[in-house]
Amino acid sequence: MSKKQQILNEIKLDNHYESLNEVFEKLDNYQVDLPSHEDSKRLLLTLKPILAANIQREPGKIRFKEMMEANRVSVHKPEILQLIRLQSTLINKRFLFVTSILLIACIVLVRYYDISTSKFLVTLSPVLGILTFYYEYRAQIYKVEEIEAVCRYSRAQLALARIMVVVGYNLLFLTCLTFIINSSFSIAILKLIMDCLTPLLLSLGIALASSLKFGIAGGCMTAGIVWIIQITLLKGDFIFRFLLPNMTEAANNIVGIAFGLALIYHSVRRLAFR
Amino acid sequence: MMSLKLSEISQNYKSGKAVLNNITATFTTGISVITGPNGVGKTTLLRMIAGIIRPSSGTMLWNDQDVFTNYVRYKDILGYLPQELGFYPEMTGREFLMYMAQLKNIPASLCKVRIEEVAEIFKITDVMNYKLECWSIGMKQRMGLAQAILNDPDLIILDEPLVGFDAEDKIYIWHLLSQLSKDRIIILSSNILDDYIQECNNLSLLLNGNIKFTGKIFEFIDIVRDKVWLADVSYEQAEQIKNTYPISIFELFNDRCKVRVICDTAPNIAGVRSVEPRIEDAYTYFVQYNNFAKGESNLLARDK
Image 1 (tube, each protein chain N blue to C red):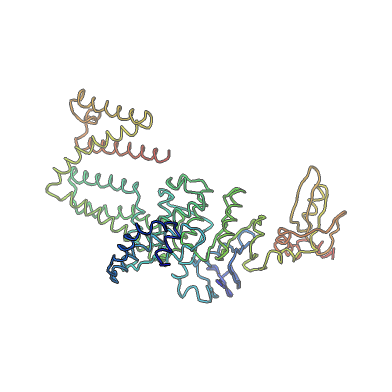
Image 2 (cartoon, each protein chain N blue to C red; image 1 turned 180 degrees about the horizontal axis):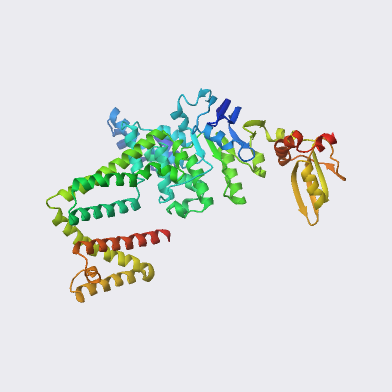
């Protein structure tokens, strides 16, 4: 009995030998070029993590540490750069919010009170340094230091990465500040940003905050009512200019942005705790 | 077979006073429990094994190789749960484990799979998207254990791992640790000798910076064989006995008290009888008996 007949017997299709003979012949004639060494290598690299992940799902068959070894890819990036990327995730939204407010306040102070930029930056930098310095001690403050210390990286590497993140952030902050203050277009850009940003943030804040009490539709409706008041009763004027008529336009914008951001922050925080 | 050998390890305060004094011990596969009263140096010893603090003198060998000559390699096989555990509060459980996975150098392709796996093991999957500041103490402790085994370490060091759990959870966690200990070394500290601790492979008793006992649980208990006495007395009598002898258990039933007295010979108490020793008796024998024998009471000597 030929091999083919044997197979057909096993799958109980021995009566169909004639009809399947054609298929067998096609299969016999089908020629495939052998894959190159590179192709095989590429295929293996693609399959390795997938196979490893699938094997892991069968408990008790293989230990995770063996999978880690099998999947370890040599990274040529220096360790400190990998750590900087990781540590930068620790700069949280609250911190970004506070420093953004500080940035805006600085611009306003310099612009509207005609303070010398260089003197101002020199005075501000240490304050910023002190504000961001606590990031260096973040792990200690939150008692994460010990579990971080037993990970692969040394405490010195972690501290260095944090310092670099903090310094990098400060530099970026001060560069932005210097650029905005000294740019010849700064006043126009700033006014544009302020005029657009203030009502946008304020309405979003009102919508979010009222949605906590009245639901999504209620939140939209409240923000809508405020908008209607603005365009009808105030004739398109910004609501804070009506509430605080003695303040300058810029100051009104700042108050509006701050109020809007405060409402958003409060709402998001409440939503996160739900 | 994996082993961690501590050889004449000492640690001194800056003042020169010894916290740990010439500790020599060998840990092999299984669960090893380090016990002792508060402040005897358990946490210091565990922190030293984890490499967080370096010993003032002595050597630590992992599979016969000095731990500090290739410390990074040692860290790769290490999982650690500190006594005082904290988290970055604004992170969610998933974010924190991802952060730890990256710090532990777990390949990026495996991070997510592994995080889900450990979350499943410690039953925290449902809360993984909540910020850690909202988590309960028990859940945080689970998270602490989850991060400790994230890199599938060969050596797991747990400082008071069962604190914050209710009785049911303790049994579950212990069962889990027993499973893990089949091919890993688990060293944990506890100053409460719960029933399940008796299932550990090795017990070390730390007193005043020294290991006073190390061995199997039955050997520990056997030390006080024929030295444990049970007395059923009035409350007033029990109070007197408490001030005279080291006692391991003091149980009050209405106006009567059952006290287990540790003494080399039958104490001078009416109706006292010898009983089978338990782990608490052996613990009391080491922790209290020596103090009594040193002169806190003369009755031990008088009984003899």
